[in-house]
Length: 144
Ligand code: DQA
Image 1 (cartoon, rainbow, N blue to C red):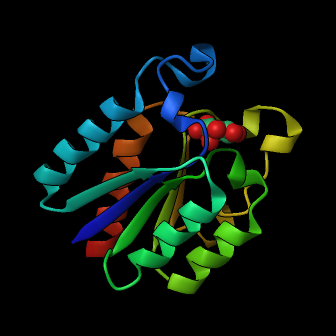
Image 2 (tube, rainbow, N blue to C red):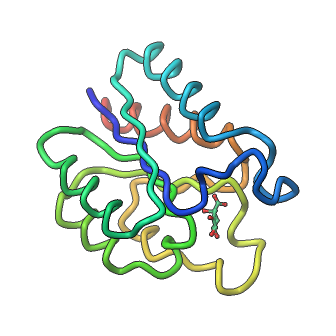
Image 3 (tube, rainbow, N blue to C red):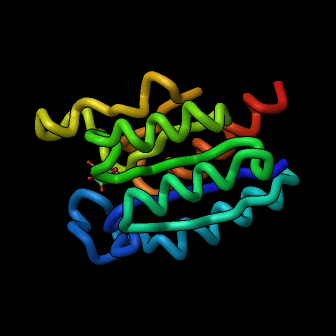
């Protein structure tokens, strides 16, 4: 089993970006943790990050026939991007949406996700550990 982990804009700056909201764990540390969890679960984890909507869409499209599921934190695109939602719908891969912060407890414009309705599950508000929780949940759902 192979899971694509996709992070969107400005998540490359985790660690120093608004640490009071997103914590101090870097994206590299999160990805390392996911690799470890993947090894424990016997799944291949492939991680990618982009600040560009089109590149995220290209990655999603490339996952078709290659990955079994997607873990995605699309960052601010989560609130706006019909294009990313369309790409996820087109490849029809089960996906889990992750957010470090509890988007429902933040500004009104962050309280809606364009991706949530199509997601197998949404994990938000647990900070960096939320990624591993989402990975475990997605793999369990795929194996059920
Ligand atoms: C985020 C929440 C988004 O509103 C924000 O634009 C991000 C990070 C989160 O992980 O909490 O970039 O997706």
